Length: 198
Image (tube, rainbow, N blue to C red; front, side):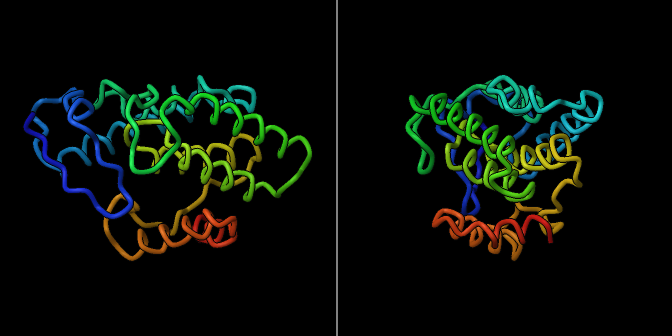
């Protein structure tokens, strides 16, 4: 396998089997990988605009997997499949389906009972799904897009701006984002909501 990745802080390393699932043999460095993944994500955004998913579609395991596959399926064979290895973060690989089901049910309850406002529901969902860490990689980008989808397609609000930065790069926005995520880990969600809307 020719691809070597230098991981930025907050990123989850892929194991050798996951790296071997690269669909495009010409990719040999991080810059090329980022470009192919970004193109795939842009295709997923076009698919979303055409699909206009409903709440009943969005809050399902099938949709969570389908979105990940749409975001990364042209680049990785494992796109849209739950990870088969344990990582430095996330629940045990055997608990992914169970924890995701709990989150989807919780989110439906939050919406039906107006437990939180729209932004807080979307960001709590984003935080929890990234904590579960369903997939080998791309969980951060996937979780942010899920929050945007909840905001736009369930609550008819604008998607989040995520401070307008590229959170895949090692920069000031990424540092602030990770800091807000750590506060959310301690159940202080306000900084992550503020970051997402700034």
